[in-house]
Length: 445
Ligand code: NAD
Image (cartoon, rainbow, N blue to C red; front, side, top):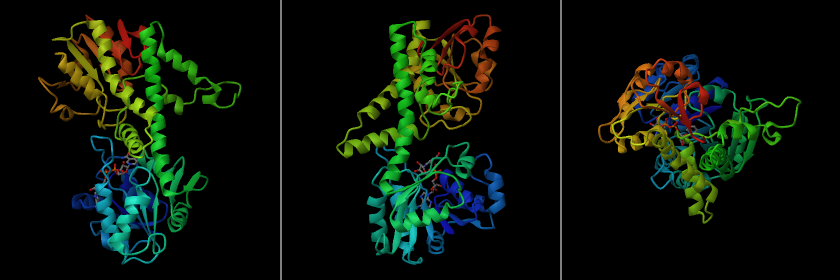
């Protein structure tokens, strides 16, 4: 099938080359001419495992990039919209990029064959595709949606860092829309043999994407609230609490003789200093905002966000209980990325932790195995010193605060044992064995 992908960022580029790998003929469109040139030269503008090889295999042979949106739409049967949907401060998503792209697509649809389908892959709140997107398309094309052209939503579940693998081996395919759109998407994905498909209407498909992430965020905030209560009561270890909970057959599935802890959902029922990244905070806020707008407040999700917002302060409070006055004390914050194995710092809990420590007058250093000093620019006051080497970062520190569960922090007990005055370890991810260091405290202890 001939496919046009509008927006060649993470989602668009991975979708484009992934569809080429499935045997489709794909044109990726972007307004950024440099990005287009790089893609056509086989140099992916983003770093994703396996993307270089895939791009090299298909570029110039069934795959290309262009800035000519109208030409690409007119030559295709399906157009995916994969442009960004940033959050506004009130949590509501900003659909202006989607609306702009869709207006251009709509104008081009009138030159395409009848039955062309426009599919929204950007993450948009329920009601966007069959609302504003369809309205803009109808106006721009002067054609009838559902008759002359199809409209649908096909949310993307890929995880940055493993996006290519996630696209080529999906756990599910979710799409919805009018008959034209659903028929085109069924045909497009026919190569994914054995993958469960949920084919529904557009707003249900949109809801599935938000609900999936809201469920994970809820698991995290639930575990954090349990851990906070455990700390308040005292002598309750939240790690053991959750181990005990994870063993429930409701989480592990039917008893097969030897119970194994499921890595899946159970991995999110863990206390820590909160979730971050480009998805969970934004999606919880957007769904809660959509609930307020629809007159159906999302009380659980409002609480999920509030618990999450408090966790960095709880980590700093644990530190204060250990050290007392923080002014002038050297504190090493370990981990800036919102999770290990990525350089993504968007909404990372590291930043509120750093800001609280700076506000308390601490002498703050930060370490991360991949994130550089540039992300620390703009922090208030004296700022934070980035130290590239772990041993140097913890040397002379009164406290070490673990924010990201990087594997290399597992070596801290040996590193700290070499120091004359071992610092207190405040473990925001509960990754170290408490008895492995001289002084330990953590979330939920
Ligand atoms: P991105 O910022 O990496 O890419 C968006 C691209 O669209 C940019 O290259 C931009 O230049 C281009 N663009 C903007 N307006 C355009 C227009 N009118 N015509 C052509 N190109 C245009 O964004 P992303 O991370 O790929 O996210 C895209 C959407 O997918 C968002 O809604 C996001 O929430 C969702 N999503 C992202 C992820 C992820 O992990 N990144 C996962 C699932 C879903």
